[in-house]
Image 1 (cartoon, one colour):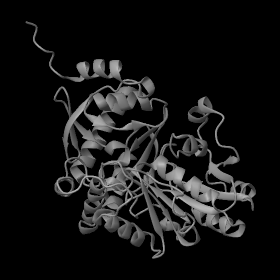
Image 2: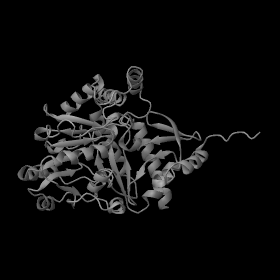
Image 3: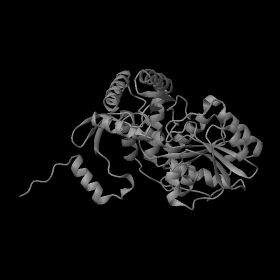
Image 4: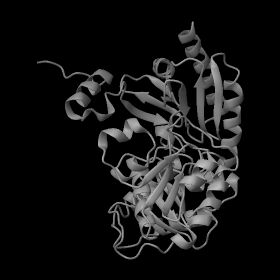
Length: 396
């Protein structure tokens, strides 16, 4: 009798190719367990995770506070739909409201960043306007409305026709933004830092100028904080250093601490645009996901992780800039883009994977890292050493 094949990366890939649609390609490894910033694949190999589920696992893997909160909640109440309330969703809504600084802000829960941005589009239509202004290079999701906002032709073009009356302008160009936004504009949507584009920061004063332009024309200013949100950059949403108040904030990724959860937060005049029946989500605000979010927020606050994110981010940038072959290290807090002098970022990401480090190449020139907030200085120095070694091998 033939022995069953041992489950490993090869068998996982074979199963994947037989059962999954090819939109993701074939992942190189199957991850099976993790603790903190360390994960293991199906072959038992160990990795230092500096991608964090793409800015999602804020407290790393298997954090005891999240395990405790989720276990307690799922053994009590797993799902209720939005016909009813539950304590976890009320607590989370209050926390997010407090984070905005607007006691009249109101929350809509969903499951992802794309869904949050779709909700923002619908909300903006209730102003009586339809035009939207977004940025070239921006990423706002892959659903039809969200991909219409996304300023990346390679992702948009195969799915045309998309939503009409969306104009894209160069990110950081205040004059272009001023020309594009008119009295017919329903909303302007901007990322505080463009993550998918390679961790691109706008010039100082850009978001403040956007706020002024929206105030003048009556357009809603929507801040897509899906990647920058929940403290990754050292503030809760990533725009606070510009001292502005947006009309709408969209968040997801790290909000659920590793569980699927998103939110569209409406502030000021936009907070009462939705009326009963205007929008909904069956799983939005799920008790288990909200329990994980509440636990995550509590740890961030109690451990002072907003401040430590800045310290660790500065250490990463300082050490990485010493490596030959890097032209720029940009970002804020623990959202960092490493710009290479040669266009070999994808080969570098593959070599780092082989050497036990997880990162992401957003383009041929840029490596993006978004590690968990619980990384240590040793993790930082181990990452820098691995990066130096792999880049040195590739560059000869």
